[in-house]
Image (cartoon, rainbow, N blue to C red; front, side):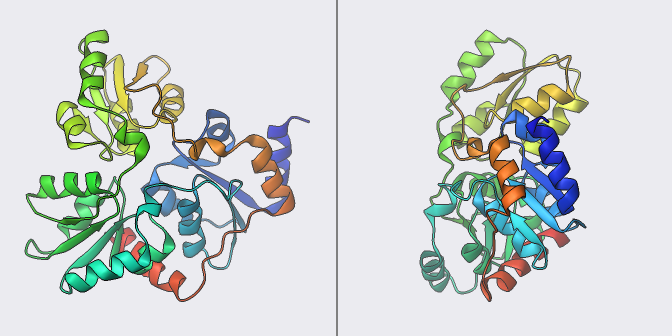
Length: 299
């Protein structure tokens, strides 16, 4: 029996669902029941009926699923898959910042730990940051953590000024506007789609700034034959599957998140077979974090 069929059999036996992020390796996306960006995965995690959720992504994503499903078993095949950006701020640092701005509301990127979500008023993703921020009055002071680039992009689009934490995604930080110039020269006329975690110089040089889910929707709805994609290269697998007649060129070949690539078919199999590794979030952190996530899902 192939490892894929073993996973399918175990999944049936355990009444499990496999969720995978767009940046996961292609073979993991192929065995997943649902693949999406952070917002799509949060929405899916909030409505699963299965008893077991196997989350193929990084740790904060599995934490979010566990927070939304306190009565289900949430497994992560790669418990050591962290997120450097999420680790760029801790609870003490956020509490200190809040003390300096007592009237501010805290918006935290979903790419953050449960502790940070628990200290926040509302979560956001790259898909809905504009909608969430727009739901607050224009005069409302806003602290945005931990990603300075998504925060700055959101503030710019709304013509507002946020208090930004200086966090960033190392994978997206490697991309520069010089890479865009080189890619345009190699592929004349191809639109450049980049993620808002990229720097302002990259965002300004691109044609469209979109979440990974937004990139997929744009590619599906466009007649363009070639696209230059400025985000983690794992998205290319889904793009090519959904658009077999189109060409997708990575803005930067080395834009690879090593943590996202830790998941393997063997680890998914072992996770299902041996019930490893179970993700739990202690109280009262879980309840407080759930409030911030549910506030986001209501917008």
